[in-house]
Length: 275
Figure: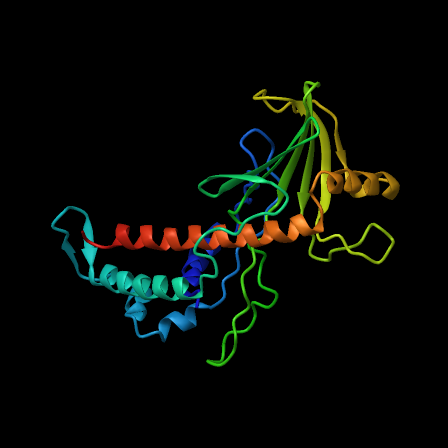
């Protein structure tokens, strides 16, 4: 499963010297940091897959003209067959044919890889924006060069950075909180319950469609007093952004990311295939 994702390793290696662009959680706000997508299998798997890929890895191939324009090689044909098989496998393991619902009365709006959840309560509008691109954390162990046939691959989970915006109806300001899923899930409550998400930055921004004001003060929580941090977390929880919400958001994001990945494979197959 997920063999096609290993094809991206060659591209990643070529780009390893370039800086990563941050995640665009919302077109109206600054993006937050992202993590790289893992590769569940290395290229040695592809060499032994029997799909013609050893030839692809060795170099150029005889080419013929496509009847509808463009280059078409035997390698393209092998690539198309491989993608065909991979799409079938991905659809077999796809858990959600439709996106899971969020509890708490959230309305969902999706544009490609971007998603926005909106909830209105007692004169306030709360929106949560996220983008599933680059939302799969790196694999824990990428050093192993061999995977046994009976070994179960780890399930890929999407944990995107997300931006919470709280707007009161009678004000022209929006409280913006940049959040993420920390790897160590450190609890700030002191009561034994671990928060599965944390707040990175807090700022005020103009409400509506106004542009992000870079000169507005931004509070970084790294050196923040824990009492103030706990009040901010309670503020979010009172508005429906708590651990339950964060868990459901992971399920939603994972389903959306997998759906977009399958769509990408299908688009790639149609692009490579000579129509």
